Image 1 (spheres, rainbow, N blue to C red):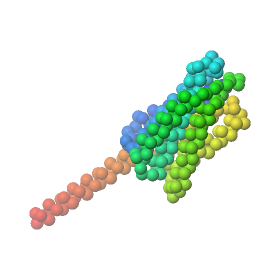
Image 2: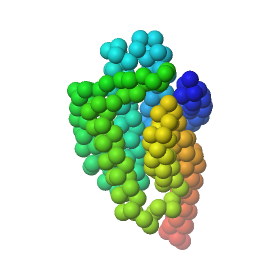
Image 3: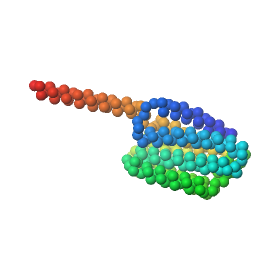
Image 4: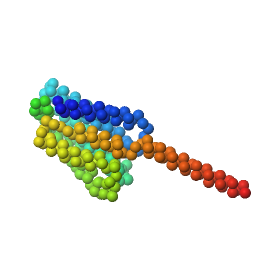
Length: 240
């Protein structure tokens, strides 16, 4: 029951952030697009978790729908990690548009493999656990994506103090702590809570779209005024 409470708390908090974020004007850049996907993914993951909790307790772990839910949840988590990896690559390098199709293709292939590989579900009390080849493969791919994030951080060590990297540090640290906690006490699942914290941090550390928009408008205004002034000076000299 404690996991459902975590999920519902995250749902309420992220819903508020989602309303604030999408109610404001924002730039149509890759960083904002990725964040929009991440926050929606986070909410979808919470719905899957809550629905799965009641479904597992109602029908048992061997019910075919519950096995499907376990695979969907695994694909969700992998998609979240891949989106975060894309964000790290975007703020670290300038060729994200070139590699993005490859990222999407790789993720699509991995998702299909996860649905093909066998996944089993076990319940201890009212907590369900997924295990099997599909789960191991999914987490292995997520681990590789995290390694790519760490590589990007090391590769751009000069930018590492930028506030945009704070959620990445939190994600890497919280992921390892979550795995340790769940190894000690499997009844507590904190992956969703970890993702929700990272998504929230991104909202406050990603460059504020409103501030950036205002800044660009001011720069354009100054440029127009300067152009008009130069034009006036030119006409004045010509008239002389």
